[in-house]
Amino acid sequence: ATPAATMVGTTIGAQNGVLFKGGDILERAKDVDTVVFDKTGTLTKGEMELTDVVVFDGDGRPLTDGGQLTARDSLDENDVLRLAATAESGSEHPLARAIVDGAKERGIDVSDPETFENVPGHGIKATVGDSEVLVGNRKLLRDNGIDPSPAQETMERLENEGKTAMLVARVPGGTDAGELVGVVADADTIKASAAEAVSQLRERGVDVMMITGDNERTARAVAEQVGIDPENVHAGVLPEDKSDAVEAIQDEGRKAMMVGDGVNDAPALAVAYVGTAIGSGTDVAIEAADVTLMRDDPLDVVKAIRISDATLQKIK
Ligand code: ADP
Ligand code: MG
Image 1 (cartoon, rainbow, N blue to C red):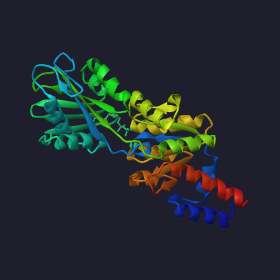
Image 2: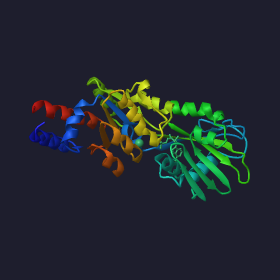
Image 3: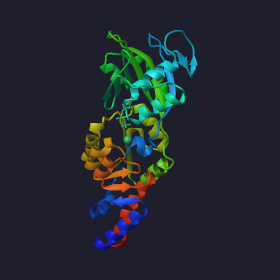
């Protein structure tokens, strides 16, 4: 494109909240044949809310069903939530914030853990009182010698609803006998225009994919709601592996636009043919990106491609 055309396109972009980081990016966007969306904070609002607390007994049987306490002993829902929230108050993760806020809203006193450790992509470990508390996914428990399988049915039920379900386990002080004590779940809200954006991209012949650290079942439930094919969902991808996943997609000869919002996404944005940071994105993501969408609207992804298309068609 001529410098004049580039300037027109860049200006139209800016007026629409679509910031291209230079003329070459403006030219490239029209050639994108695959859009890879991050899930949390990109297709969803990333505003998690605590929705479920399920208690398990010492043998790993659920004691509650749909909020109804059905049995006997030691821990109740509030105890499980207090343990989880206290452990998570060391974390800035949106999943953790939702657990802490949810506990406080339910009138639970949340204190700080004695020690805290992040296990990226899997969860957290903390010391609460004289116990070690683990909150996270199946792998976190397995890696710590605790069997998550008694909670499988509960986990699947919550995940099929598109929720992120997290196991809560406790290792009483002075022992190495870890026990599964419960499951907590957070739900996120899908952005209003996410399905429309996916549909408009597909109409243009662009393949739409999703990449997430979240588990397969939750990811597929969200994908289904926005119209992304199950085989285009890459779930359980660790933060440091997101860029490898984008590279693998591009190694198939695709020109991929990666759309993300988080610190986690920066390396993937950097390797993508076009990296796009959306809305409330972190500074790190914006820095790594080629295109910044000022609004939080997935439809602006389509707009970015359209502006590139229109600019280069009109003025050749
Ligand atoms: P995303 O890509 O969706 O931002 P992450 O890579 O941060 O997800 O986390 C992947 C998975 O690890 C989560 O779905 C959750 O099961 C678990 N996890 C991560 N952080 C936490 C946390 N603070 N508490 C509990 N579970 C967590
Ligand atoms: Mg994210």
